[in-house]
Image 1 (cartoon, helix red, strand yellow):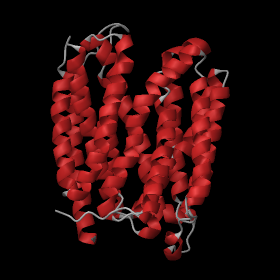
Image 2 (cartoon, rainbow, N blue to C red):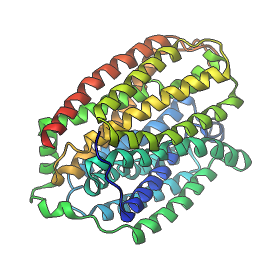
Image 3 (cartoon, rainbow, N blue to C red):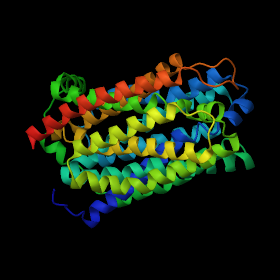
Length: 406
């Protein structure tokens, strides 16, 4: 059993700032799904075009991560956070102002360029300011932004958009983000310890050297397979729930809200547990829970709302309980002067892997008509389980490397 290292008041302030900042960024991404129907009707776009609207953010975020990696360690972390968060706010405002399909695609690309890098900057700050024995708790609180966005994002976006138009949720996100930007500027201290050990080299040279590091590549692969396992099934959750399981469209917001609430409540406990026990053992246990829930989930037929809710909550808790120890271990892989570059590349691969996962899932499952059940969903489940097993092997490699360094 490891000794628990308490967080200082300043560290708690940093955790709160990063968690709420992450909430606004995740909410911007999550809000696209519930707005899909209203948006397609208002802008008169086809489902394939809406897919481009969604994927353009991830693609732009992935490319941005690679370009940012070269100079991420050459600047104060706070300055980078302020710069990219400001760009994210401007992009989100453009989304609300968009009046056509092409304007919205352009706005989502702009938002992705800045918003997609936010996670990597936050991870670099966590690695700089918190010891490995504290990072599980910190990751748990920061990941609460994901659960909170599910609790608030879907129902509030649908309610506000239903009372006005699909643009209004973006204005709400801009308002919340401006409050957070002010808090970052006046509440967060400069973070520049990594600059003391930063060796003079070109941005491209720094990027190339980071990619060439064999130990870093193991961390990159572990993160990529983590995203593959999470995103292979996620895009098809609503269609499976309605067309295969038989719940109504009106029950979907309630489903997401309750599952998001359970995720939100369990994350602090998972973070606390990650600092109390072996992080890889926690990852293994969560992977087994996710595997079991996937086996049950893909075999669901016409069943009750309660059954679907319990299985969904179990699976989501498994996904998030894997993510916290995995991110804590991965954050310990890079050296101090490489953390910004490492986290940028890591975040970029996470975005790209998520996009690839959605493409693979789309090739496996199919429907005879929009009202028909999803076919080959069980096959998709077996693919997810294979990815989980590969991810366990890669995360074990990361764990052994971190052990050797600490």
